Image (cartoon, rainbow, N blue to C red; front, side):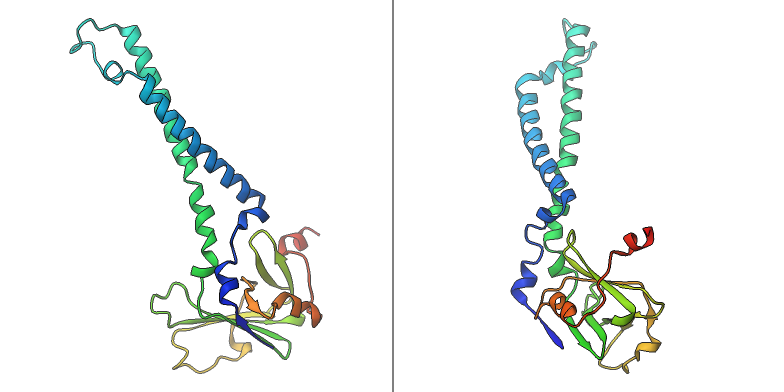
Length: 221
């Protein structure tokens, strides 16, 4: 079975991803709330803090009152601390927005095939600016288990037997000979966004490929 990338599905794969991930919802709510507090604290500081008094000193300011100046300086420091904290927390919106494009940016030229009990996933190396090198990951399904990571919206294949999951990086596949499965480097886990047609998850269920628990859960048993 050969699977084809669904361009629209890939483009929208991580849309509203934080709905499925409690940590994502917390990040979004915290960052938005911090933005609101930041704006409110900034407005309050501009309206209430006497900057000329807070930044004054006893040597250059006539009628300098240490108590009054100290109150103004304390208020300025407090507002600055709140602004700094809320600004940092507001930046939590960055991973929320950035992860939205992860499925589009992390890989390209993906291909997926299942033949003779072996799943083969290939994609261009995202670290290669010329998009020439190719990663290929092969999983012998009878020696692996697969599961759906709902938090990250990824199909995960874990090796349950040594050597059942292997990978190889071709520097220039057009000039290199195909490396057989046995010569590939063993690896433990394959993760991918299954934005293909037909649905790879449904297909794996149809052919009876072993479906299991996440690796961490299996280790705990």
